Structures are given as C-alpha cells and as structure tokens.
Image (cartoon, rainbow, N blue to C red; front, side, top):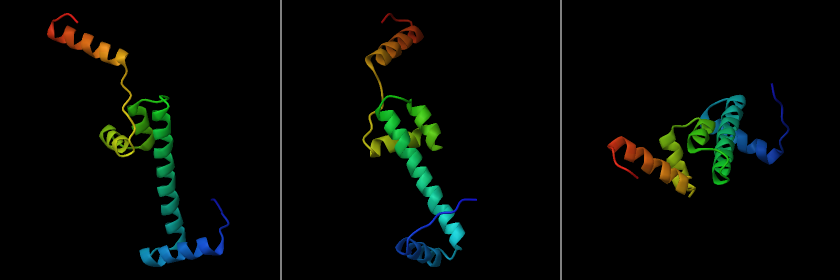
Length: 103
C-alpha cells in the first residue's frame, strides 16, 4: 500500500476524473499512476537510445512494446535508429556470404 498527500487543486482534478470515469478514487489513481509509469519508462528508454546505451530491441523491451511500435515511437520522437558504419560493413559481409559474392 502506498499513501500520498496532494493539495486541494490536485484532489479536485482527481475527483473530476472519478466522476467522468464513473470509477472510485482508488481506481482512478491506479490508472493515472500506471499511465505515468508507462510514460516514464518510454522517456527513459528514449533517453538511453539517444545516448547509445541500449539497442532498439532493449528499449522496446523496457517499454513493454513491440519492436515495430518502438520504431514508430522513435520516429514520432525523432530518435535516429543507431546504425554505424561497422553495422553496414557487417551487413554487406553477411549478404555477400549469403549470395556467394565477395564484399
């Protein structure tokens, strides 16, 4: 169990959402916390991606989303997919081996 103190204005907003959603206050707070946690995880994953600390796969895993959804998120947030010259060289070598040609 977690408790938190909030000011009157914040509480009024929660009560408004409670009425709008026709749910009890605990359910509304849980949903808002869940949404906030998911947003935090996305922001953190994007930050790590920008810094080259994680792969796109790892970032997707951190967010609990598919690789495709992660790539779409990266596109929306203008985060480049990390792909180095070394990655290109490896891909060319792989394709050359697969198709029997020299790189």
